[in-house]
Image 1 (spheres, one colour):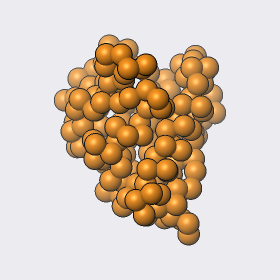
Image 2 (cartoon, rainbow, N blue to C red):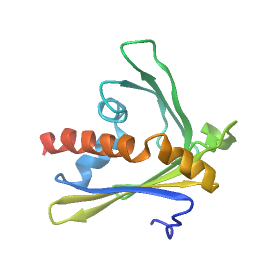
Image 3 (cartoon, rainbow, N blue to C red):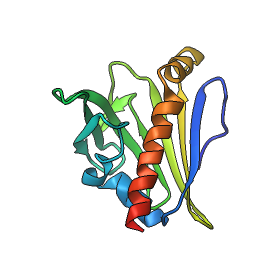
Image 4 (cartoon, rainbow, N blue to C red):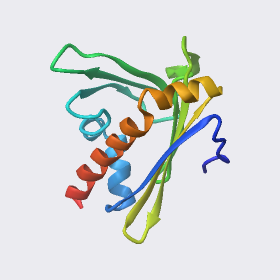
Length: 158
């Protein structure tokens, strides 16, 4: 369930992915699959931790231009509803510990669609400045690109 959207605080990407929800879910919850689409190419992603339970750590690293892997996301899963919803935040880290620099909470929802899966990434921020910063950093290009990469990966598998 996505809370009511607040345009002053939230950013949203949605698209129809021509693959069953189970395949999209697997691409989100299998670290090897996740690494293939989570960061806009040509950068590379490495999953350091993906503890798929509420309170579980969610940590990724990024490598740009073939360089060393550097921290990318350090967060915590808040909810996982099988085949329907993944909620994570970087306001907390694994074990519900407060993060040093909280920025956002994301709700990923998957619903059946006649063509496959209705995919929505809804990202909430604590204030308008953080929301605007995220948009200026390229939210729509970045999250749109990874949604496209996810779609290409899972549509090939279906």
